[in-house]
Picture 1 (cartoon, rainbow, N blue to C red):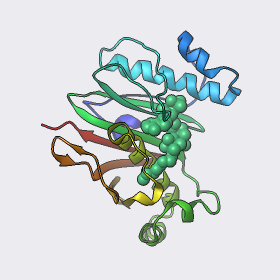
Picture 2 (cartoon, rainbow, N blue to C red; picture 1 turned 90 degrees about the horizontal axis):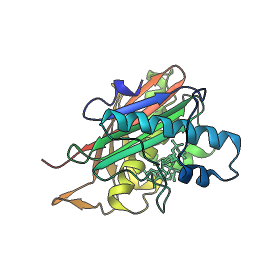
Picture 3 (tube, protein in one colour; picture 1 turned 45 degrees about the horizontal axis):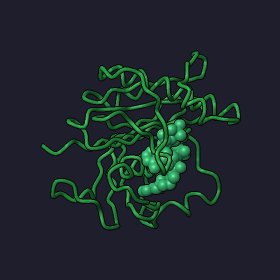
Picture 4 (cartoon, rainbow, N blue to C red; picture 1 turned 180 degrees about the vertical axis):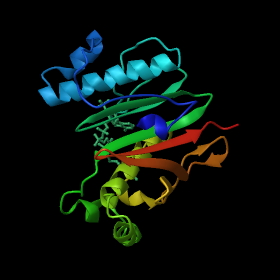
Length: 219
Ligand SMILES: CC(C)(COP(=O)(O)OP(=O)(O)OC[C@H]1O[C@@H](n2cnc3c(N)ncnc32)[C@H](O)[C@@H]1OP(=O)(O)O)[C@@H](O)C(=O)NCCC(=O)NCCS
């Protein structure tokens, strides 16, 4: 599924259950401590995906540990992102020579709980979502918006190294499987270019929504 929205030079891996045996590194095991079974399962399967995705770049398995804001830390020269939701775990990685950053997020294709949309969406996003829902009722556009915000944040954070609130990006979702996130706060400047617009892709399949953002490295 993820390979349909993120192809080369991005290396991806995904799982739809936690049936695979995963050998964690001691540092990863230590992080889990007394984590509940569901957290252990999602963390472990996501690490398996990370090892497979890194392998696709020719990078040997390493522990994938969190930084200060829970961002996954990658080997030198690699950028990447992890997602997990019920029934889905995935990882995407790329060489820094190819991508500046990448963010991925998966959600169930089901409406957000009451109150969530109002808390995460701008009025214009809500209005556009209503029109999209009327025209394409098979997609939970409110949940897709939420996911696009989270994948935007996962791509934003490793570059900006600061918070981006749900109200800080205006996201235009399109029925053709693309979206654009326009950042409404002062963006980081990379190589003289402000990182204020993120282009993403999305997919709705088998009860899941997947959003991805990949920013090419400067030429
Ligand atoms: C960080 C956040 C996006 C993760 O969302 P989530 O619901 O836990 O989603 P997922 O399960 O899909 O992803 C979890 C993974 O995100 C990654 N992640 C966590 N914090 C991160 C950060 N600051 N930067 C990049 N990736 C991060 C981790 O790899 C984590 O998996 P792991 O703990 O197993 O390593 C969410 O908790 C959050 O803080 N959201 C608020 C910020 C936001 O979304 N703003 C919108 C801007 S438009």
